[in-house]
Image 1 (cartoon, one colour):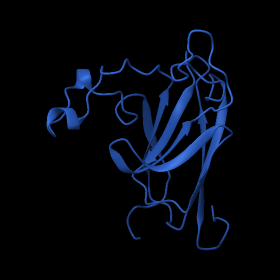
Image 2: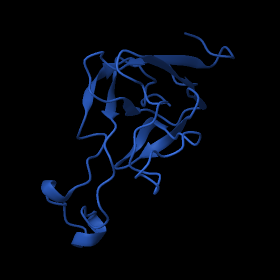
Image 3: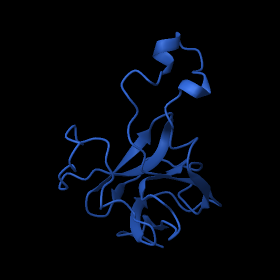
Length: 158
């Protein structure tokens, strides 16, 4: 669909967490895509370009700043948010780009998982640039979760 100006395209993604899912979706992304002109997100979500190991990904993440931590979670980081895409719920994410549609891009969705204990996971800086053994790698959006394909802006023909 054409965007706000004739030279822009609007890509709208409706993301649904299956009713049978035990957790809400708290991160959603598409890749590879060129840098977007703009991104919009539901309340208490934030969008950005470049995430984890993919510098050509558009990603939206739940960043709930309103919900108080439940008892026992005073550190504020390891509890689920009511603003996540709850089981059976759909949220809409929008990306505006001057790049026309391509056949498909990959989408990625990941459910809530509490953060690991400090020091549990490694990154390549801890291994001298060598790949991190899978058992020590942080659960990346691009390696853990649900993936598939969707229509998105072409990274070719800039």
